[in-house]
Amino acid sequence: MLYRFKSQATADVVMLEPNARQLLEVIGKAPGAQGIITSDQIPGAISALEAAIAREHAQHRNNDDAFASEKHEEPAEREHVALHQRAAPLIDMLKRSSAEGKDVVWGV
Image (cartoon, rainbow, N blue to C red):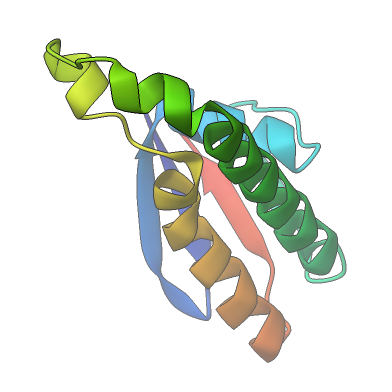
């Protein structure tokens, strides 16, 4: 299933369900079939996403030595998509929407 995020300030952002659900949970929204992030809620949503990204970076920095000595032979291990990569399109949408005072809505 796909989630489609829409704003009058940007083009749509489309995500796979697991990724969209994770990001919605990070910003404190129930990952239902549809919803809204109002322009008033956007700064908090951006802060929550950026804080989660910072936590992930810190966790990986702490584990760098362990990861350096491991061989990642499984494709899933070599192709891991970090939170900052998954969140970047939504963060951009949120920032541009905030600048124009527009809400962001989603639906499946």
